[in-house]
Image (tube, helix red, strand yellow):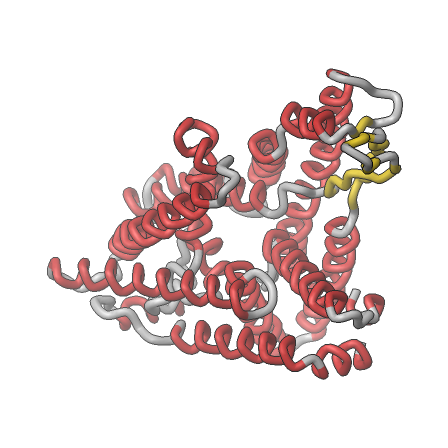
Length: 423
C-alpha cells in the first residue's frame, strides 16, 4: 500500500486533485459547525443532552455527520439533493417529456434535468428545514426566524451541492458520495471515542470489543459482496462494413450482485421512521399512540425487524425494475450483433430478466440480514452502535469507487497500482 501511495503521489496532476479534494472536504466540515440563525440554541442543546431524538432524524444525522442535531447551516446536508435526484428519476419514467430529455444523445437533455434537479434541491431543502426545525420547536418566535432558517439551511445545501460538483469536476471520485462519506466517518469516530470514554467496566470493554470486531467483519463482507458481479458470456457476430470486418469475438456483460446499492435500506428506514416521527410531533411522548408504537415498533422489536426486512425486499425489486430494463438491454445487444450462447431473440430478454431476478433475490436477502445485525446487537448488548448497515454499505461503496477512480487515473498514464495493497 505504501508503494502504491508513493507512485500515486509522484503524479503531479493526480496529487493536485487529491489535495483539492481534501481541502474541499475540509471546507465542507468547517462550514458545518456554523450555527444557523433563527434557532434557539439553548433548546437544541437541552434536547441533545436529553437524548430525545426523533426517529426520522437519526437517518438525517447519519448523512450529515450530526450537523442536524447541532442545528448548523449544513443541517440538511446533501440529503435534499439525494431526495430530488430520486424524485427526478421516478418522474423521468412517468413523464414522457422528461424521458425524451434523458435519452437525448446530444447530452443537452440530461443537462436540463441536472439544472431542474438543482432547483428542486434548493426548494426541497427550504421546505424540509422549516418543517423539521419548526416541528421540533427549535425556531424562535417571529416569521423572520422561519425565513432565516429556510434560507440559510437551503443555502447550506446549495453550498454542499456546489462543493460536491466541484470535487467531481476537479478532484478525485464522486463529490456527492464523498460528502456523505465524511459525515459517516465523523459519526463513526465520535461513536468509537465515546465508547472508549464510557467503557469503565469489564462488560463495557467487552461490548466495545464486540462492536469493533463486528464492524471489521461487516466491512469485509460488504466489500466482498460489493465487488461481486455476474458475468454473462456474449458472442459478437462478424459484420462486414466496406473492406473491414468488425466483431467476431467473445466477451461478457457484467451485472453487479448488489446493483441497487443502499437505496432500499434508506427507503425502508425512512418509511418506518415516518409514522413514529409524526406521532411524536403531533401527540407527544405521552399519547397512547406513541406508547403503543414505542412498545411494538421500536428499533429492536421483532415486528420492526420483520417489517423492515419485507420493505427492504420490496424496495430492492422496485428500484431494480426502474433502473434496469431487460427489454432495452436485449434490443441493444441485438443491434450490436451480440448473442448470449444458447439464447436468441426474445429469449435474450427472458434470460436477462431471470438473471436479474436471481441477483435481486440475493441482494434483498443480503441487505435484510445486514440491516438486522446492528439492530440485534444493540438489543442484546444494551449498548449504542455507532454505525448502521446503510452507513457501512455507503462507506465501502464510496471507498471502492474512489480507489477505482485513482486506478483509472494511473492506468491512463501507464502506471500500475498495487491493487492488493488497497483492496
